[in-house]
Amino acid sequence: MIMIRTWIEPVVVGAQVAASFYDTGLLMTVRNHYNKTTLSSNSSSEDALQKSISNFYITYNVIMGLTPMLSAYILAKLGERISGKILICVPLAGYLVSRLFLLFVILWDWPIEVIFGSAALNGLTGWFTTYWAGVMAWASQSSSESRRSLRLIIIEMVYGLAGFVGSLVSGHIFIDLNLAKRQGVILACCSTSCYALCVLYSIFILKMPDLTAINAEKINCENEHIQENLNVPINSEYTEQSRLLDNELIGISTPRQLNGTPSKLILILLFMGAILLNVASIGAEDVINVFVLKKPLSWGPVEVGYGYAALYVTCITSFLGVLVFSKCFEDPGLIVIGILSFSAGILIMAFVQWTYMYYVARAVMMFSLIPTPTIRSMISKHVEGSSYGKIFVVLQLGIEIVGVSSSAGFNKLYQATLDWYSGFCFIVFSSLGFVSIIPIIITACLQKSRMLHSRSCLNGETAYGSTIN
Image 1: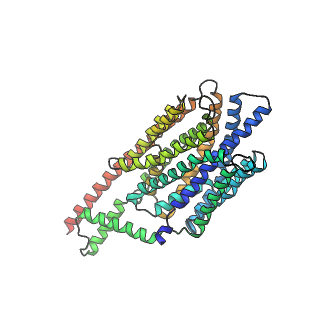
Image 2: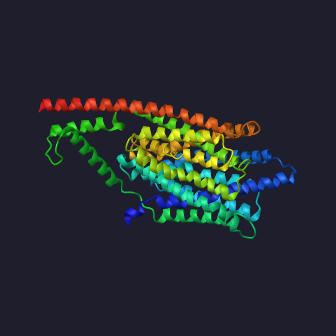
Image 3: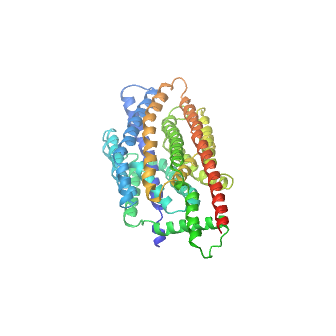
């Protein structure tokens, strides 16, 4: 029972179902609002509606992305000193309160600008920046280094399954289940209810993993690895000299204890790759949300829900991709496969004219969610376990800051190219994806050279120990 209480998956499922309900409800509410505004101004221009929705999301995303800068790092420090639950509970509480604003906008006809206030409140409580960093830190602490990439991609798969189910039904709930003849009221209520359950679970049921047992298991694995390299039986008695030699070899074989400069360089390169890829991914999804509402697609609530579901299916296919490709490739190879999948799929999105082409593009992007959790796994192997929350928050902040600052530019670029070629933005996103491969390849080369250096040092120390004996 205690082991089950350490599982973060129920929180991920509940929060993602709530988020998928909210995303569909918000997009359709914003479209309905600006559609009425356009009709009241006697303007039937579809481009005007597109620009209004796009401008709304520019402001919304800027507020949501920048306000966590004021709180995310503080929450990360508190999580490091007090409890990792802070990184999960506080953002979820912020989600719960801020998501109520959508219900009020639908139910009582509040101005749509109220949503900007909810975004600010959500950001000040950490938002996704802190919440997802806390989830990844929690999963990293409860897994061994050898299984960490798989563990993190499992979390992504659970996240995707929950989003898939929530998105499939969200459009139907928005249309079919109404209260006082107002579309979206039941959907908003379902979203806030899911967040409330997540908050209660994370506060009263969720239990921190036993770090002592995990660290002991890690040390035993390291000792077994060293003994195998030295051909020393595990149960043999050690002399003082052999124990000293083992301690030296631990320092050689552990990446984060090697010369600090290469580790810092590797971290910088991993950060660069993650930020570039996520900037392209975030920008692409922002534009897609608006793109599917206009001709030739002209999607409604049900189609929007299905589109979100197709996005979340990539979490499942990415998990399966890790299971298959991890037998042939190491972490850098998995990341490159994922980046190529994203870049090729988003390039196809630039030429979408029919709904089926949208799903073809999503099918090509089936491994696009492999890179980010795998990069987090690689990063975690170069920092201490107690710093996971802080380092993941810093990474997420970097992604959000660069992503938000560039998202406004991407949306303006989309508006500027509507009359010329509305898919041009997707070509830009695809190019950014291909560029993000460069730091990953450099990282792989650095790690390979370090591994060869470690082996040469290991062989040298072994030969030296044999000579002494």
